[in-house]
Length: 73
Image (tube, rainbow, N blue to C red; front, top):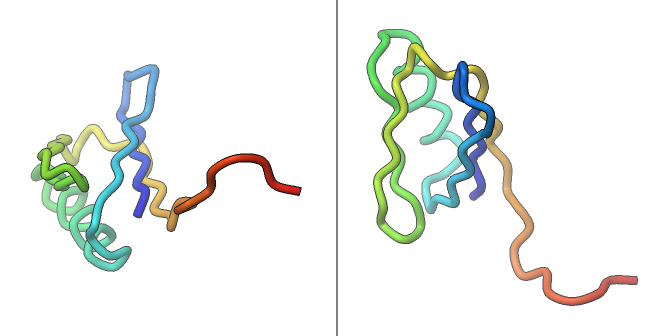
């Protein structure tokens, strides 16, 4: 699943491809924003991405497009 995170005062958003479900990511975001802790996600390559909850501007959680290669008609 693709997760895009907008960070305050940063020109670019973070894009993370994770194996976590939409519900898991949403719960982690809610907890990080609510108590001012950090949002910690593990991407599909087992790297850890950590963002301070107080600096999150927005989070877009989507299914992404899996398996699209080449031209489509």
